[in-house]
Image (cartoon, rainbow, N blue to C red; front, side, top):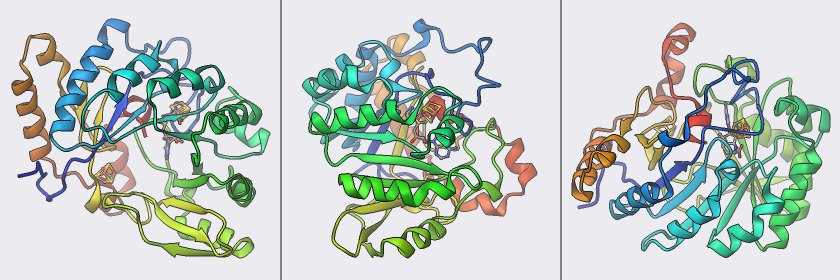
Length: 339
Ligand code: SAM
Ligand code: SF4
Ligand code: SF4
């Protein structure tokens, strides 16, 4: 029988964070005051090698994961990441191989990624307003740099792209309709993500969340929308299409309409821990047993046991926790295990 967790959820997706480093400092993810020159990122020997990632992925795919996504930190900062793409693309059973990136380095990497067998790309862009964007990436990039990455991806045939935009009250909410119009015209799928309380460093407050329903209403007022059914079990985005037949958007409403019941994701951190929830407090190391000489069967047993014990449903219980309890909970950081 298929591997299932305690809430009968299968393992279907694997998110692989290949680095904890990033060239942006989005305040909702890696605030610049904390991630400054003094911050100690993981030393290279602590990171899983490409061979180690590929070996673990092969085992996790055997247990049911059919989709793999490279993320981070910023995955394009991992040296020769295209080699890893090539190794993963060669694995039997990986039906979908994708990457989430801020696109800053994409123009110089896109051809190598394509040649290596990357199938799909998600690019993060929160706004088209340059001033707002600079604020949302810690003054690391202009909008144009990301657009250059988007255009390069279009040219290489990665269409339609998925575009991730985090919505934050009082920061970029006044620019969301413009963003939707832009990507509707270019034929890409824009997905709005509710600002989440991942980690303990971004100072999250409920008031800063723009509820998905509000975003839908904002866009619907200008460009009418109608809901459509999800593509597959475990899809996290609620989908809407434009009533004129031209394009669609998605809403990742992890705060106001949680979807833990269908969450089929496992996360592998850069130093080889697996996490069964984005809001997990601790992970299970696969690197230590792996480097101590564990066989594939032994590693598989650890992964099975970890998934088999899984009861995570943080987003469903979030609202029942007080701010104080939420603040005390020492969660893993987003830049560490990817989105
Ligand atoms: N650096 C890459 C990027 O930004 O696309 C990949 C890693 S990033 C952690 C993955 C996704 O998580 C991005 O789309 C980002 O906007 C989103 N994200 C980061 N922090 C978030 C938060 N606090 N709430 C909601 N989404 C967040
Ligand atoms: Fe970097 Fe992505 Fe986090 Fe922004 S969201 S700081 S680009 S990892
Ligand atoms: Fe999955 Fe955890 Fe998010 Fe729920 S809170 S959807 S279990 S990652």
